[in-house]
Image (cartoon, rainbow, N blue to C red; front, top):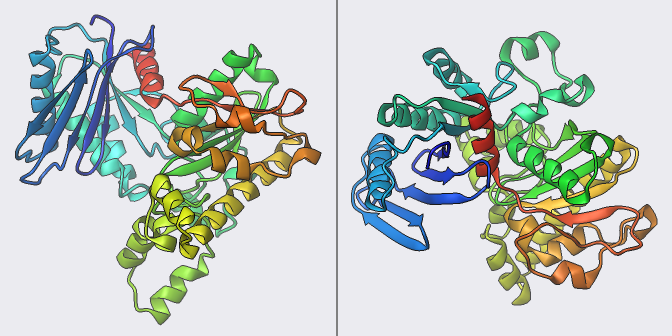
Length: 395
């Protein structure tokens, strides 16, 4: 286990973890701590082809990690003596301060907490997980890897909102972008898979999961992305609205009497596909469409319309594109989404091969025709491996 990295992704009531060999990319063990703070807590742990469970109260993140470490030990891995190189932590928002993986000190942790104003649903949980993990593994370097870091290269015209400049400066108002670890990993894998220098490629990466984002990457540098100040902007998502008229917020305040917290809840948790048709799982969405559900069909059409809108915008902004890549849960698994997102674009040099698109694989693959001027790929993302490699290099 020497030189392996423990990757930790803390949510408000859960912790995902994975022990990774950064060199080989092998996940040695992985697990999920769920329902933290509830009486029916659950830990599922996978190692060496065997799944194990722990059920019972998990009062806080620290206890959840301690129990997870006990499950590691029960399978022959004592993390306190295994010689792991680092613990890599996913942190959603790095603000203007953090542009690269950073060894966590008390000052860094305090800054992550301060940035919670920009990511109130994510950074507090990320900080709590860091604090808990540092108590359990105090002698190992802990490294923060920021979702926003890859998009630090956005040009001024892409990152700037047209609002009062003094207010924007005082309150950190700009477009930051998210899912950066995935976009960076996938765009790098694209270049490897094609045997190309990433500096020569113009790419569009579509990270489509319950959360969804698009990016335009020119020569290995991000030049545009769909998410903005928060992860709410951009594509239609599982429970998030994506782009809306900002006037909707004032309208709902005045006409519906909703306060800021209620509107936040509405746009982040009760909108997107779930708000339109009641489900946010794409498998369930397809089942409803097949059963003739009109709301589900409309939700799907809205989803595809927004996705095509961003693809078109990035084609223009990049001045043409070499590669379009689908990744994440929906992007990697939904044949109809890939086909519909790029349908009818043959005049732009984009042609999907239906047979290739329908094939299932866990490996990177081409789904465009041999005659397509633009290569279209499906490339599985692996944020845990990316975080592990960043953390190992930084520790």
